[in-house]
Every structure is written in structure tokens, then in C-alpha cells.
Length: 489
Image 1 (cartoon, rainbow, N blue to C red):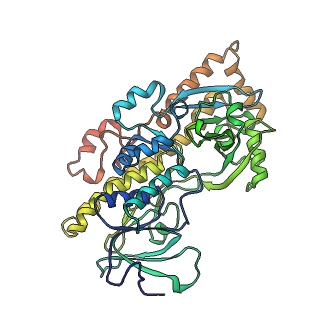
Image 2: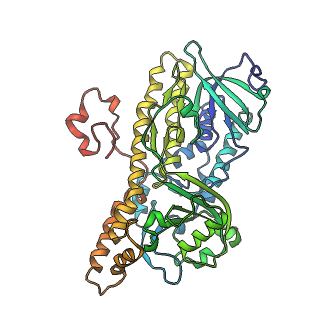
């Protein structure tokens, strides 16, 4: 192993080292740079994300992006209002396909006035493949020598007898010990997504892991907007009787590039995701994924170009502690602290809000570490309950698709295709005696799904159990908003 390199001379200690250069790590870098705090970022990949990943950016995150100086850059390339505020459920998109229900969402349509009262910043929809370059450019603008792609962190040590952490870094593709570097920093932020650093630090996970397996295809298909009955819908859910309901059937969302009039139809991209069903292979390749997509949409001749394909497990877990290390100089943020189901688009948003909470506290601790050590502990006290609550609420959103929408229609994964078809038929048949009941059940299910589609991303009157020195929660119950543990209900 080499000695500390020219990037970090032996007498140099960075104020903050950031492990991971995705949206959360880069946001941390920008917020630190704006406060005049030197920082260094290490990202294992050679550049920004090649997978669409996160899309929804809630109002609180957009407020932070305003501070970071990128809010208007995001709006310029985000989904236009006529796309960004609609979602719908269909049986399929073929000639026999039927719309089950459509609705306004994400602060547009009937919710526009309400959301405008929450914040001057608007909810935005922009996939991570187009958001991340905007954040990266800003981070490099403020910190031109501090953003390092293609650099993998293999270890971070916070020794009891040191006043800094030691970060072990190497070129991602290198196998030579001679290329390894030791970088010193006063504090480290671990924001490496779902990678292994949290596990390596010995931090336990709490919640439900590996709930079920999903596959996601990033596709290019120029004809789909013309074939969709209502291309205003950013997100389309499918609930085909033969496939056992919504999550099993899959969902589809468009990701631009936008504005539409500046890009040819051939450039339009979509994402399709589904859980595995009995007839699926254990692992999809491009051919089997195209076949599954066409079967779900009931468009057997749809031209499809698969850009990327990924398998992933649904998790609803949070780290047992966000401040770790022998001296508490390491902080977990983003997916390194919580792995959240994407139903509700709260993963990246929660991560950006994590580092916004942390950065100003690091600024004070760097000036006077003894005086403000307790302030650093408030990061765990304030953000960990939110991570746990967001994981739980996102899991609730996921399960509401089957427990509420599918149940309203009478469908289920444990029923045959014929049973599911018979169950949903009255919904479309106005002469059937069960028609009105089915329609009302779907209306009620949509009200339940407001937690996903009408959720500004803020909780008013949030309660922190660790700050409750006077027993207020036990006496008042906070109007039933929280369990005894303080988790929001």
C-alpha cells in the first residue's frame, strides 16, 4: 500500500470526505462548498448514472436545489405539466384494453392550488440519468478539484485515538496494491447507495428486506406515445386479470427527454418494471424482457429497443444508527442509511434532505468539535426516525396497490385468470348489480393511495422521540399521529 498520495499529502486533512457521487453525495458536496468547506468526493463509477432510477423530486428537495443553484436547470428539462401530473390504471394498451381509473397527482390538476400554498418550489419529474449530470456540473463548478469519478472506497476507519478518519481509495478497475491511497478527513459522509460500506461498518438494518424481486427495463420505443390511449399519463399501472393484479402485471412510465418538441419521437424513452410471475424466467434477458413487455401491454408488434435491464429486490429497511465510528466521525446518508421502496418516490428525496440536515452541523463542528459534538448526534436523532417512517410508508404504498386497488376489483395473485376476469367484469358492465359497488370500492382505494400520489413530502408537527424529555408524546399521543416509538402512523 502506498503512502498518502499527492491527492492528499501526508500533512493534509480534508474537512469532509464523501463516499459516493450520486445525487446525495454530490448534493452534500455542493452544500458544503457553498459554506466554504473544502470536500472531496469519491465515486466508483466512471461518470453519472446510466440507469433512470429516481424520477420524482418533491417540493422540499426542490427548495434545497434552489439553495444549491440548480432549481431552474431542473425545471428546464423536467416533464412538462401536461405529463407530470397524471397517472392511470389500465388492463392493457391493446385493442381490448380498458382504462380502470385515472387521476391527478404530484401537485398538478385539482391539487395545484394546495401545493402552491406549501412552497414556491414545484414538484418536478426528471429521471436520475438527466438529473445527476446537472448536480455533477454544479458540484464541479464549486469544487473543480474535489470530484473524483472512477475511484472506489474500500474502507473507512474512525480510530478512537485519532482526530480524523482514514479513507482507503483505489481506482475502480485497478487490482494493484500500489494504486491504493489513504485519504484523511475530519469527517466522512457515506452516501454510496446500496453498496456495502454500511455493512462493512457493522451497522445493522431494521425493517423488511428482500420483500420480493423486481425487474426493470429502460427502453426506447418511438411508437408508444401514439399507441397510448392517454399519453398525458406520466405513470401507467397495469392490472391484467391473467397476471394476477397490479404489481405482478407491471407499470410503465415515460422519461423523456423533454421538452418533447426539441427531441424526435425516436429518442423517447420509457421504463417498464414488474414483479416476477409463474410464467416468467428466473432472470430476464433482452428477448424475454421484450416478450414480457409486449404481453403486458398487449401490443405484440411494438418495436422495442432495450437500453438497460436490471434485477433488484424491494427493501423497506433503515440503518440502526446514522452516526458511526469510534469517535462518531462517520455519517450515513441516502440509500446507505435507508433503502426505500420506490412507491412514493421518497428514496432520493429523503437522502438529499439527510445531507441538508447534516451539512450545517458539520460546519459548526469543524469550527469547534468539542462544543458541537452533541449537535452532530442530533443528525441521528432527527433523520433516523424519518428514514424508518418513510420506509414504512413507502411499503404501505406498495402494498396498497394489491391490498386496496386489486381487492376493490376482486383480483388477486392467488386466483386463476378466469376468476380474476370474472371478478373485474362488473366494473365495466353498467347493467351488472355489482357495478356501482365496484366503482365505489375503486374510489375508496384511490383515496388510500393519496399517500403516494398526493403527498407533498413534508410532515407538519413531526415528533422526535429522543427529544421528548417531558413525556409529551405519552400524555398527548400527538393526535394519534405516532406509535409509542414515535414512528408516524
